[in-house]
View 1 (cartoon, rainbow, N blue to C red):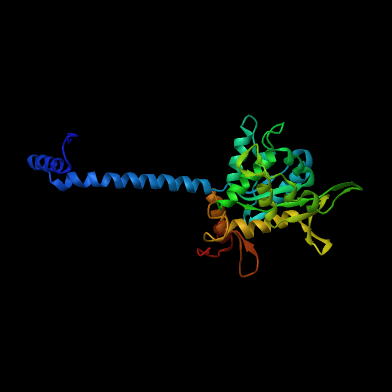
View 2 (view 1 turned 90 degrees about the vertical axis):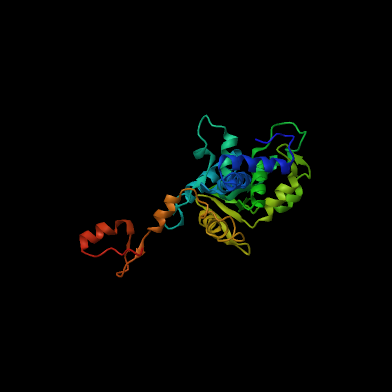
Length: 316
């Protein structure tokens, strides 16, 4: 070990003399000293890269954001309808829905923040009743922080980082009766982004409420046409009577914006970062049409081959 009083040249000379007297090649001493900083930097880079990869990992296809007092029934119906569909053959849609994914005894705020960060598509149910309390969520106002606004703020940040896509469902005034739930068209004049205060909220000092709501409204979404007995959306604003299934439209948005894109310009790329790789490997062994036009699961082909005498096709 060199004394702190030695100069660089005298220290190098001391190391060389020690190596010479001990019979150890000087290269065997110098190389580890030179390699140590490089190894340290490489370890730091690997740790940072692993953290970034873990942050991009996806556990949920869709995060449903809603206000319990206003739209609990729509949120539950949408969650059930979505999870009955598939994002691709053999891969069922998985939603983060607080009533099914936040367990008793867990910190609910930490749970929904993790759920949001590890989702591909953010689907806020932006009803006139749901967003009305957000106007009073400015700093200094009485009352608690608004959790729906907090979800919007986090979603806007994740979208800016390229970690999340946003697909709002706009819900106007609801008319309940006669066995159905009609929904008026969302009124932008009275509930658009311009109606919110340009002031910081209780949950974000860097973004104003106006900025957050402008971000949510900036994304192309759908207008809910009916909330019961089936959830439908307006397929064409010029033809209010034309409607399509809401869950089907949301899955289409997931596929287009947040699932199978390739490259940084192709969206969230949820499939690439899906944590449950086994589910995707199972999909790779999904059904294909045989020469007779029937569909058979490749995982079952050995059993089929044994029963029919056919040879299994290993190319699947």
